[in-house]
Length: 431
Ligand code: CMC
Image (cartoon, rainbow, N blue to C red; front, side, top):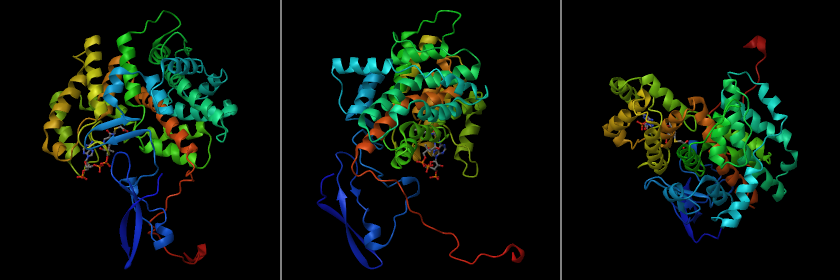
């Protein structure tokens, strides 16, 4: 970061302090408060980090008002229509689009790391069959630290590189096997003749008893889902990965922490929660009742798949995902699915409702991705694991960037303490 020329003046308890202001290549200026406590003896207060930049980064940029999402400067709409997931992965990891030769080498490397250590099968078998696939993923990815000792030394750039490739390559196998275990079918091994998305589909839907042919339109839709969820700058799970990693923890442990955070319904769990909500609504005539509940301050119910912390105009990923949803539904000829009918009517009614217009709440990527995955035959419990496998490259890229940053120090937020001040211990007989 270059020396700042601009400053912001802050007056605390009658004393003024000049704070450096940094200008990013895009987005709002940032006030540097790192020395504030040392100089003024005060903390800043920002639960939920609504106004706090936790790091500097060159990977992804979002302009929430414009509905813009850029990866290394390239708009997501162009990436989604012209590129594919492994090329995007290269871009996120290394900062530039690959040459044809570099891409081929990268694809070969990823393809040749897709198998899991055979012993990991026994790890799966320790779970109950009804375990949620996300529970299995948190456990299995964390367990990779016990299987791949030769890529846990974060001070060695080569080991970091191998860990990154392993995570991106093995995550589809890990997610597919979590699904197969959950439904009681045999694990299907990865195939090196298939592309990343087709390979994932065959590991999920093939069975040893018959041939499985991957439908190219479904593979393209799957690949798009991976691309649209690949990275989203400093969201909750990415920040979790960075925070876990700031202590020097190994990459597999850090990514397992990211998966755990992603699971929540306010983040990656929203696509599952959204489909469950559509099922609960059940029919188009019940939509107004649910819209009223979402607007009622005394009812905790929210329209899942609506709203976003950063996008306050539209979610550019949702626009691309909606197109994919139309293509897939058309291909599969399933427009009469009741959940999909409810989804379409809900989208229309909510977008016309003054509450949603005023609060700038519109369908986010999870609203449509759930519909596509439902149509493809995935159960709702697989939606968040698919999000986790897509986001792995984002987590890994942000993790690599952080480790290589000389400013990297352990993340240690402060607090506004509102508890009891110092008091003397009272013996139990006197309480
Ligand atoms: N349904 C009804 N009201 C809502 C909704 C919703 N889905 N989302 C926000 N609001 C209201 C909220 O009650 C609040 O009203 P008021 O100002 O009167 O208190 C206002 O809109 C602002 O909401 P907020 O909770 O302060 O906004 P946030 O930025 O903290 O929350 C969010 C963002 C995504 C957590 C939230 O919109 C939400 O819970 N949405 C449903 C879950 C969901 O779809 N999450 C997926 C996000 S996209 C995937 C990803 O990137 O992880």
